[in-house]
Amino acid sequence: MSFFRPIFIQSWLELYRKGGFKQLMKEKGFKVILLFTLFYLIRDSIIYIIIPYFAYKSVF
Image 1 (cartoon, rainbow, N blue to C red):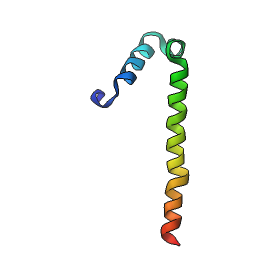
Image 2 (cartoon, helix red, strand yellow; image 1 turned 90 degrees about the vertical axis):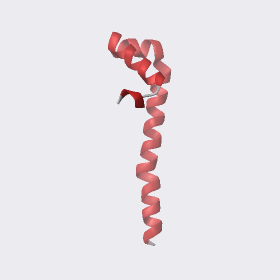
Image 3 (cartoon, rainbow, N blue to C red; image 1 turned 135 degrees about the vertical axis):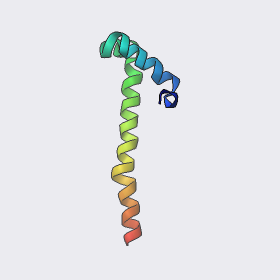
Image 4 (spheres, rainbow, N blue to C red; image 1 turned 180 degrees about the vertical axis):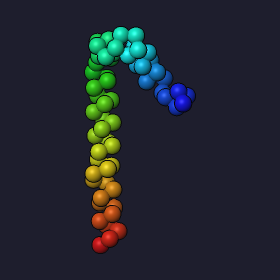
């Protein structure tokens, strides 16, 4: 299923495999943290805000 991964994720995985988490953070530090934060911010807003809002709206 590696064909579903974007190219930048594949390069990050190669860095992680070669040098571990320290090497990944040394070369791509801010981008990794930003992507991780944005992913969870979007995911949690969908799960905890948008879905309950539409469920409440359809009930009442």
